[in-house]
Image (cartoon, rainbow, N blue to C red; front, side, top):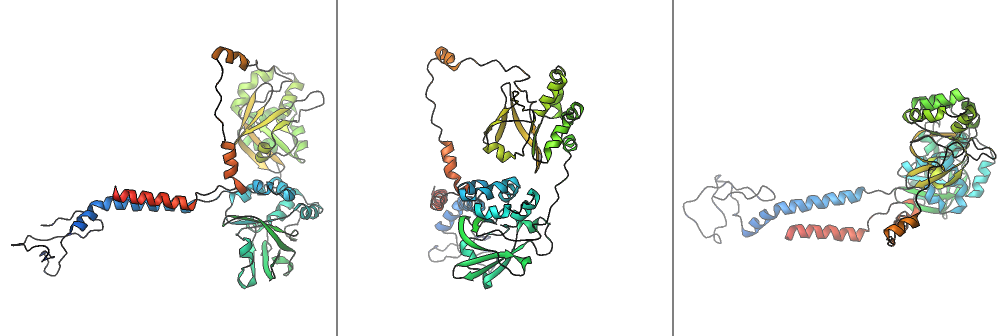
Length: 443
């Protein structure tokens, strides 16, 4: 009786023993239990395939898994880095950061940014819009669909409407958050607000960056007009101490109120304010030192935890160096140094170093960060003892070996071209997959 070797890719035989055997080459069929069902007798090829089936299955599953992983690999983009390579768009880049649109653009996929050069931005800034209104206007220049240069000239029926980020916020009424894109032929493509009765304000100039179908950055000749986007937008109401109370910084908030430093923070808020807030456990542990300070020193210490400008996390990372604080006053410097290392941002005084551990609130013009220590200025506290000179250590331990060269930064810069993470070369990926597949079959 033939027994099935595997249930994968090979038929199952349920055959009965016959009274006599006929040479297989002359009778390729066995008599099976059902008179109407005959199955070919398993050949050597069938047996070989059956023994190879687990390997084949493993190879196929592994190959498909790798292909699926490769197909789902997506580009990550950073609009700030992309535009940093184009100095003529520095003003546009700056206001994307100030209005917080840069972070929103980086979080989205399938998007098109209609970029304005410095001259075009100058005409927009001449309108003296508030930062909140400017955010709406710039978000009207961000399309929530992908349009490369080629797609612009292949628009079905020559015209299309597409939604903008301004429309997606819910602030736009009706179709006022849509942009009309029209192919004017002869190489020209025009853009205009849907609410402007078909009037086209700007034309396509050139493509700056295209990462299909993730992000496209296209230059247009001038700003798009939108009465809805340019409508005055009220500033959000921000209660500094109430925000801190809800986010684990109540002890620090109480000190601001008790010392009277709160008023200085609030007076600075409208023009931009960055606050570094230690959590309650840190403040409570610092209280013995705090109580030894005079009233004026307590105020200076608390003001030392604020910067009189708005500084997003990206700004802190890119603008390392000495920073003045709310306590800075003539001869009393009360400054510290901002340093970044990858995603980590630290604040270094001559006494200690604190690290930013999270963001409590980030809404222009206010940003509040949590830090892991109370900031201690050198004007109020003694610097930590200097470490032993490195030369002395080398004399004791012997000459220090040359450290290996670290080219990771160069590699990162190369991999981050146009702000995108590059995929594996297609040919190399195919060869690796083919080698895996063949190896699992024949070995």
